[in-house]
Image (cartoon, rainbow, N blue to C red; front, side, top):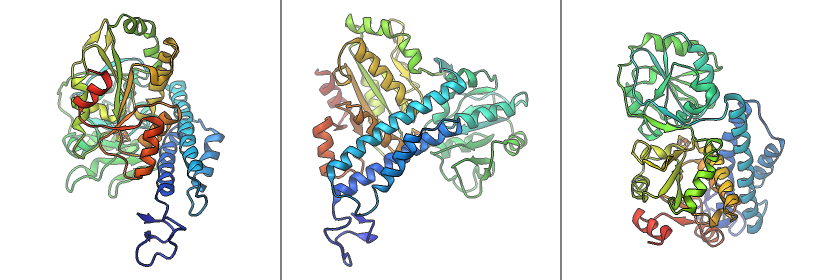
Length: 429
Ligand code: SF4
């Protein structure tokens, strides 16, 4: 274990503060959890601020919580556990603020079928999560003949009325972030990275047509200091056009306002036994082995169950055919990771309709985690007292054995096993 005070292995040769500093593995684990949660909150708060929304309470919490991760400030485990849950509460507020900022600016998303191929002519592929960057680019490329494509987590953009109104928002290209080196190389147009998860291009590939903006940066790529996209547009015009290559359509845009419009029907289908269970299968994707679990899990979900999904983990299964249950699609894409807020609103509405707690609903969350926003979302779910969440593919390395045991005991937090075992356990079959 690394000690932040000694800046070496705690308890190792030269550690002079045994028992005082980083020796307490559980405090350090909770401090790290808070740090990762804060990074997630910061990402959402940044997006909201770009859209003109901020919250003094959130800013104040960030200062307090960050201060609380300083060495030797507290050795009270319960205090840190409380702070971890407070981090979840604040992240919930931030996701709500971001949802309002998005919908006030671009309208409530509506379900939409999105093209996944390319159209003949010049194109720009936009990756990351920033809707405002995309909006400004769409405005500046109107009537230029350039088509704009979304990549990965930008897919939900197609559901927002204020973005889908642009006819040259041509489709979604590629899948989750870990495939981008291959996919960006194949995309012959210009590329814009708005946020994480952007990767360093392999040598002699697409670096000369990669642009970054805002928090992103890749050595050798062109960094845009403002939302003036002239150089990106010029680049796109100078490159060979993309081919006409139609692809399969994928559906997104199920904001909670759309799903809740179907609430009565969903409730009656549950009451009549036609919908047995809801699964939320989502989160970040990643490159390490073990993530096929989520593809297999989605494939094996019985036909009388609905799948809600969000974030880039859905690219593991969002091209599959799931069909419908009496007009309700079996696979409902809620959007980006921050749209976990929509998932929570839907769960709260169902709990209200069935007059029960969220953890008493026929709903199981099967989450894949990778980066810090996923940590913040997990903390929000724990703050909301959602129990029995399955996470994977591996336990977060910063959560110590003891802390995991506490989370297991208080929230019935579980690690994924195999899709068969987990489905059997959840559905009692
Ligand atoms: S969902 Fe997570 S892993 Fe996927 S693109 Fe967004 S931040 Fe990256």
